Length: 82
Image (cartoon, rainbow, N blue to C red; front, top):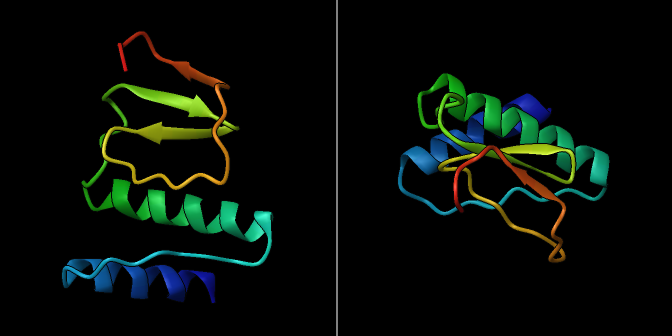
């Protein structure tokens, strides 16, 4: 079901809609985020060779869209000013 949700999310984005993915557990949110990011990488929307940072155990690439529940400062830039 999660894969089907990501396909619908991509289709809606492709039509110019603004879409938020939400789930009732942190584990599900993590899986959906990973699937969405992998989809965007495969579609050429994100470039893993450009600067990235690590935040809360996740990699964030240039162009990623991020919504947080709380501000933290536990990120590790890859040598590029942010």
